[in-house]
Length: 197
Image 1 (cartoon, rainbow, N blue to C red):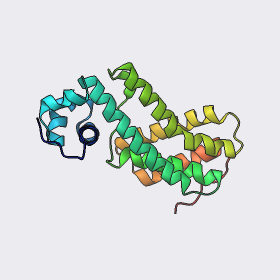
Image 2: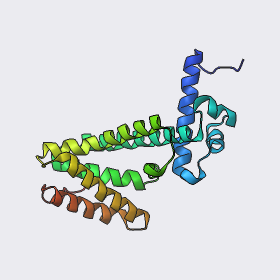
Image 3: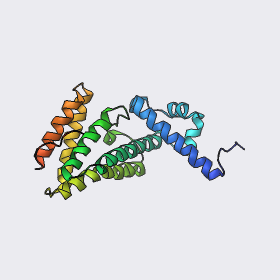
Image 4: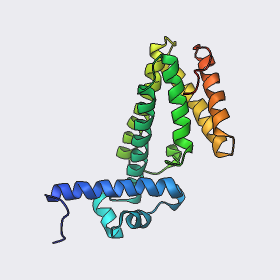
């Protein structure tokens, strides 16, 4: 029987699953969907390739787990930035800045999940996490009295995605963030941009 590295088999399996998920997220962030393979994840995790299938039955399931982990990390970073801001306008500003920074700073390059093959259960988890990622923005817009904060948050996210795309094509991030914040705040009726801290 293989040696376990925790107090119980269940704890060992949970530890290994976490190791695999972390490695999968790192591989996906480094090489994108095109270079994502169970072999690459196994090498990053320091495990045998055959071990991957013990935790995830297919490449698609492993990819879904990697995307979910990347979204969890993004959600946590964005939530922390928004929670540290005060007024609704400051919270919207924090959301926009952190969302752009998060997507362009090398933490990860989130692929377009709509076109990726993955089990439906993984897709449902990704949808739920995406919704959680939007919640701090929706909450700030609602507190600001913006009509239809759900629709407004979708439009703001579209502007953020456009800014991220421009940054990845070489636009300087600082001015791009400033312009996006200014455009967003004016668009939702929250006035002048909040000064960068």
